[in-house]
Image 1 (cartoon, rainbow, N blue to C red):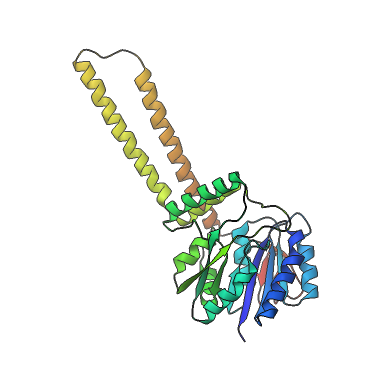
Image 2 (image 1 turned 90 degrees about the vertical axis):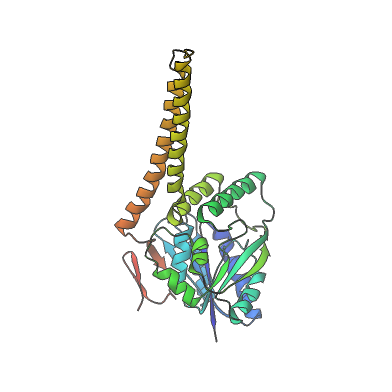
Length: 319
């Protein structure tokens, strides 16, 4: 019988663990789907891992791990993929804003031959105006940078084991799971869903965290920002040439006005472009620096008792 793994990254979600475990377990058992739930506590400062351990003791199909510190959602997803044993793996939020009722449909599409089943948002649900604007800006930026339509996409998706193995073989440290599933290809189907209301807790994403997330993922997946530097250089050259022609014409006509206004404006514009260009280049150099060091995506501090293998220092080692 095929096994379905569900990966649930969690950051300060102690209020949601028990409810999520109960809801998913009941749904999967009612639909006669053999399953395992894998919670990853991303360096949570509350009792998230304690709740995961309790759920694991109550249901042996629930397993989990805790990071030594907060490594981010991307690391949590890949840790869950690494720990999974299923023939298919679903990644979803542990606050159940990704509706569990869609899972049986994803499972059916996979059994019918789909290798990737993408969850597509038909509605974002009830969100504050500020959050909707920041999320909208994030997705517009990402869509332009990676040349994929990210407006309705999410991390809620099912991957066949062969797709999971491909993603786990990628050597880079800075990953963008949502885009990598597009990049990997394979036969893809979609399902639509409406974002559900949180029952407990609040969203951990703010405007600034979304912007940082966008910048990090954009520079790890796209070289377009580097091309923007070239565009700014061309604009600076064209502006300078136009200004030089204007100045020369006024000088020949005897109408040139003495002063430093033009020079100051030119210095400020070119200086601004230069500083922005250096910032973009510096960000890519930082990404290269992180990759060259070869540090792991995450460090696991502890796991639940039913995780196969053992933890030695910072690494999980399979038997």
